[in-house]
Length: 256
Image (tube, rainbow, N blue to C red; front, side, top):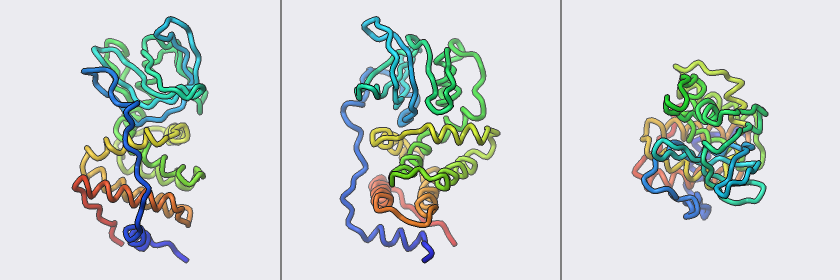
């Protein structure tokens, strides 16, 4: 039986759904007063070597959730995965960052922030120009976190679904000439957990309907990509639509 997006949405909207999108927990609220949040909801798995606040050198598998700037200094906020504990790390105290997927090591952590995470680093720290790939991540990063969270929600990270995400990026930033293989690797490296997903979606709500409408269309496209709809996908979509209504947005189904 062919799956029809309109039928799916109608069924979802009629269901009583008790699954909530997690709220941003207190443990990851702003910990540095008067700081500027460059990026949130990232969920990139890395290995970092850094000097801790106590002066000890540590090497940890680290899930980056946010990049924060204060007075020209950058901080990573995330999860030390080996001890499952939240951590703040001063970027200037990082010896290197290794991308877990590509294996590439960045001895200059600011290059990683700009070239991989799409953070526009101050020229006094990193004078090199941001690449088109980095610009694409800067523009669509929160959306990619939400989409890859959806891709993984049924426990299977389907390549067919990931191709839908790649197509979404191309539609969103057609003016940027980034490397498709590099973008694919970036999507594979994303490991969105509930906290990162929540942060990303709440920030997307600030962007308005011109971003929300195509994003929701992409979500529908991903849900039907593998020919079946998982109950968790239904529940998530229902909750997102409810949150959009609460925020005053009306999601319109694509025509045709």
